[in-house]
Image 1 (cartoon, rainbow, N blue to C red):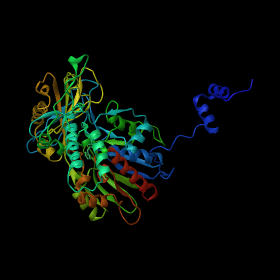
Image 2: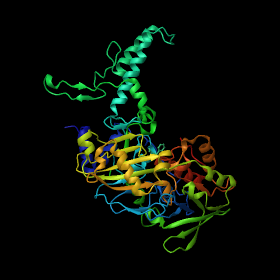
Image 3: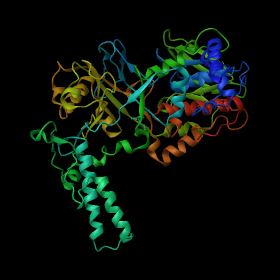
Image 4: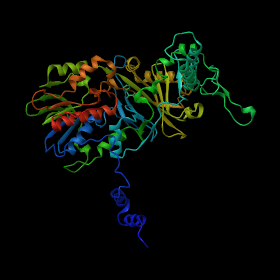
Length: 544
Ligand code: PHE
């Protein structure tokens, strides 16, 4: 009997397992090699050759820089003022403690301790990964960080309007779509001079019927129940579904819900799909921390000196000297290296003693526009949003200072869950964040109750935590404001330029703060790649 390909493959499988089968198929050209990874990154092998790098800050950018440099043969030391790696990428769980800095309204902020049940957590910083953040996803893939869907928008989420109405989001959204379609459809019979032919207007009509859920004659009444049912459907004529009454156009316009929230999921970074690491965003940080070092025993975490607060930076011709305070004993030590990457947030960096960089550099540091932001976390004893509101993940929106309520995208149907009871930035954060913790929690409760009365009941919702990122001693901002226009452009133009600008480049600023993905881990990684490439070849790669 002749040997078939199948026989041969079976024999290969016995000998060498799936890998051998794969190799064989590839050799026969039956399988093409896997397509190039969405993003790949590798510094020239051995370019480090034992040169030293001081990295200031063990957040995502600092860890990524340390990881890539170590692989290329650099010797890195990471100085981190806190006792924890990750920076703003922080998942708060039972037993975690923190204390904000004083504000006028709260001269003595309390130490807050998380008392959530085991297994529940608050992502105090980043909480979602867009599907196009290919660099973050590359590391998740490389490190085996498990991801699950993060629901940004559920049509069952609530929206609380300026004029005090609370609607499931599907109502203003689809009713507005229907009403606009209805209005536009008048074009076909209007005497207006329109830049469209009669045939085009006919197909516009056909499109609008689909777009808005109109009847054939061009009227909208929520007949398809896109905006929901008053009474759902079931067996027999007694259970013929009754669609909600369609909202009038002026009712939606007056509510102003279109002004801020209704179209959020159209913004590129919030477009579906988004993801989150299973078990908390800090799983991403842990991915870096556990990577083995190249030239010595131990893992990347072993490069970090915790409790080490950088105080001064001297950029010289032959190297960089950083002095840092060991916060456990108050002593100040020098650290000298061939290169230095600082991820220190600009609100802190701008006041440091930095010598050997251009004046314009420190001026840019001082004027980089930044954003305040705060969150409140709660533990809920029962998942009332699922049982009483059919909400499974997503965000509810309100004009009140809490701005947003995030429902967990995991643990569906379990007994308990953690809620993000407030997430605001900008003006709302400026109002909310300086308040004493207890006041913030009381407000978050009252404002949350405008959407869900369950918030009023401490037996259902409690264990509150409030965090204001600009009041965290080693952050002092939530993110740089890349939406600030020219002020941001001109500052990052300077800050992204290695120093000194003539001769060997020795000093680099990293962190999401100098990128147009500021406020995102993707930016932290882009900046780390930018700095490490500049070190290894004194040239910067294309940053797409
Ligand atoms: N990435 C954060 C978020 O999605 C912060 C951010 C918001 C950054 C808006 C830029 C723009 O909420």
